[in-house]
Structure formats: C-alpha cells, structure tokens
Length: 68
Image (cartoon, rainbow, N blue to C red; front, side, top):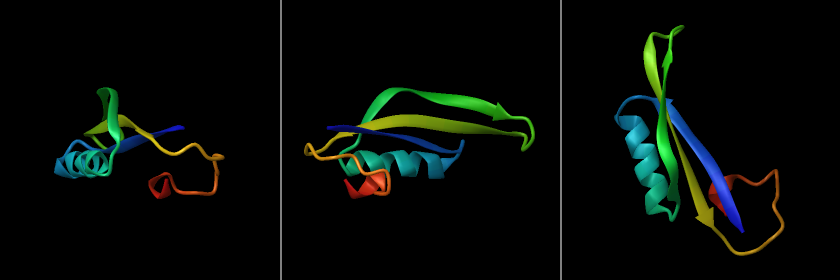
C-alpha cells in the first residue's frame, strides 16, 4: 500500500528540515514543491507531497501516517 502526506510550513529552514526528516524515514518526493504567498501573514508558504510504500494492511483513519 502506498501512503501520502503533504508537508507544509513557512518558507524557511524548518520546512526543509521537515522534508529532509521525512526522506530519512523512507518517504519519497512526489511532484514538485508548491509555493504560495499568504497575503494575510505577508509571507511565503511551502508545501511538498511525499509518499511511502508500506506493507499491505487495512488503512486506519485514526492512525498517524508516521506510524506506518
């Protein structure tokens, strides 16, 4: 089974660290990063989709994706 996450954060080093941590845990980049200007906060926001192949099992909506 393949699972999906979308990591978001301000456009700063914390965003890069969150994506790097996901990659070190076996997640793979999915598509290109996305950037959007948050006019209310007057800052750029980033997002990156990642996927991970895990053992076939029933998907549990209550389980955190990082527990797979």
